[in-house]
Image 1 (tube, one colour):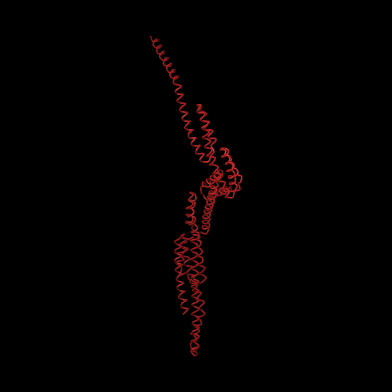
Image 2: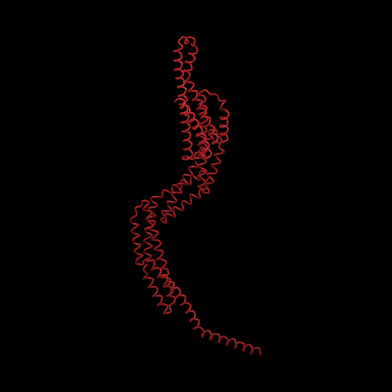
Length: 448
């Protein structure tokens, strides 16, 4: 019984297998037709795109004989249902279009780079010849050949770049050593080196010139940091506090490390201003001591200002110290001028004393004495007026010189702040106006 049931099951399985095989054999042509239709539609879509691109190429100035031939070949292959070969031909057409545009772009790029290299002094006539050959290759639709000619032209520009700007690598290496010596990360130097090599390989003269500028700026910045460091060393040898300059140095190093070049320039300008103020303040205090000894003037009248200027210098407030010291110098110059006048008039006063001492004898000749006295008084008055006039003229010249010096240091050398500049200009102009008014009154009095 069991054997009979198993036999029936086997018969059913075999029957199902036969029916399935028969169905698949019958349906195979239908699947083939569907697959063939899908392939044809895909190929036709790609072919349509190629025909559109062919029209665009014509508008862009390309000859399209190769593309036209690929299109005809593809159509023939599709008509014969040779889809594999048709797709290969379509791929060749697509690749040719890509090569055509790439060849043109590379040629235009090379033309621009050759022109810029020639403007920079390059003697690369052969590069222009290669470029001319590249254009001819495009004309005959040999885009692979055009790319090769263009590459040769660019290589000549690259070789010229190496000859003219190869020294930049050495400069970058030196800059890297300087950076390491003052504790600055050399990542920027490495990026400059990498950028130079890439630009050289790409014959990019614009980028080479850009890197050249950056290398010069970086070298200058590193030298500026070394200058600040050197100033600190010199000041410390002289026993001068350097807290201010060390803060400036740390700020400069930080700005340079982060490549914040605009802020670095501001930091360096502040260093120059502070250093110049230090030197001016030091020189002014030295000059004060020399002048006081020369004209034998006590320090009582100037002690507070001198002490304040010295104190501000010790506190590293060099700008304020400089202004205070200059004010003392102006006052000392005025006192020196006054002593000169007194010296010049000393002899005339002796004559008056003689007249007074001998007044009894002179009374006998009263008429002669009166005339003589008038002459002497007039002479003394003129001498005093002339001395006073010379003093005023000298003061005007001195203040004019100091005014021009302040303008030069602010506008041209950028060594003083605007606040200091305005303060000095107002002060000097006020003194010039005062001196001119006194001179005007003196001249009017002389004319009477």
